[in-house]
Length: 375
Image (cartoon, rainbow, N blue to C red; front, side):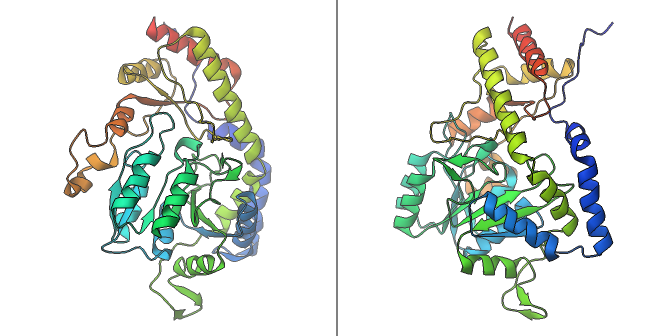
């Protein structure tokens, strides 16, 4: 007979949807009745709302978070022969966007505590190499240490593009993600804190000329119909997605607060049980962490994940193979050991359920299961 007492998925989008179902269906019906599906007022309204939320002057919707990165690099004039500084411990889209515009990723390692780019190494790399842009990643819902990066980038004339795909609403010393660099890039992939009903993305900036270039680039390089100033992309945000996201945006702060409360409970229980794992904990400058993921570390990660799986507790490895060891980047010549912190995190990190619909007794059950694993 099974001894499983409950099942806890990594993410429960159905539970979230039940609470807002009628409101979302009303918004979707509004768009269907209008028969305006590409850009239009629904997208423009979301852009204004996201710009205000991120404390920026402008926001430009696009088809995905991956496209947001590509558009940002293109708007910054990054292309063949250029290097773009970033971290190897991330989702593929960050490095992939750099390659898609013809540039080359220049990796530096990450900080062991925050999982974000190692600032000292990044500043050192900026001082020694010709780099056109830097893409710091606000990983797992917490901002990178931006002030030293911004100062060094200004000194060397490097554009700062924030990969904030996992961090909408997170704050660095009281300033919102997406407002810190020249351009911020966001994803509305369904699993994000603010997720759509499919792909979607957004770029933020406080520079009018940058916003105008982004708007042209997302629409085949055109601001006036059939007049193409540059060779652009087809990367427009659908009105249906915008309508869904406008509803969800009204709930986002509550959801993020719920995730933060869940993270606090995890840390308290882990400390109380004296479990031999390292739980996620924000740095002092990450004064608002939104916990897109709650990541623990253990040198027995794979055994632990299997133990959780057998007890119907969802988990995920973010990310099992750093970018410098991906087959497509073998040409860069990085061997194992090149970025030891990224490689160690890839071996040890495990994300636990953290979504705002998670009940307190779910967290207690997960922590009890962790204790059972460690004996």
